[in-house]
Length: 354
Image (cartoon, rainbow, N blue to C red; front, top):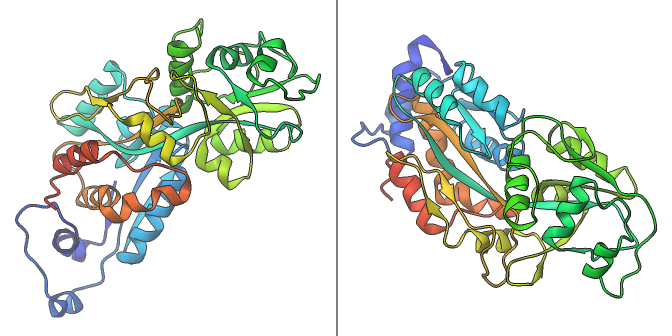
């Protein structure tokens, strides 16, 4: 929750109203008013999704540059942990790559004293990262991906991988498979994709149910694959790009092998629809969309916050992340901006008028 110096509490609220669109009617402070006011010191904390860590780090740094007295802290401890922290009142908002379950919603609503809502803020491709320098252009079909991650395919020259890579020279080496060991929204999105497209035998889950070795967080997956020859894992594309890891092209429902990128992830979101009620912006999209150039394994990360009576600093920060400046940063870090239609709904929910 926010920690604000006692004498500056009212000044914080008024200054945020003046600086950030979306507070409704507000008292606009002049430069002289601000200079004569006591120094502002306020901070809030959030936690959750590690997939959005790159975006969150960039947002926090720029928001602090614009408002030097205001600080946003964020712990990338996984979607499940972030939701628990929010429910327990330890944080002012949560980041999650998967919507809350009905039991979590009820507890979050109780914590808020009103409705807790999901605000989609980041779109990101989930890359299948691998360490096989002799195969720089690996292609994988959905069924092959499911076979690898279930442990049924355990060597790189397996006939199913060879069928996806005709003419390629695949080594007869064992596949080292890594997955998330923590409660992970990224895992939920990967298993949702595999269930829809690859005949995955398990229900989608934030807890891994396939084969392989578990490691914690997106950073853990990145590190494990980078330093383990013959390995493969899944991680948000920004981590893969920053670590210069090889990423597989995945065959979409149109039959194209497409590489992960912000552009191909945005195309996957075309036609996505909001399925939440009461202005709760949970998004559903089709893993089997046949759009041209679609990369099919994507996630939407939500910021979870109280719908009313939320901390003014939470609203100010989320207004920034949903604004033109906040969204424009995303491609620089391997993410995709929200589609315009969905972004308009987020801004309306936050009260942004322009």
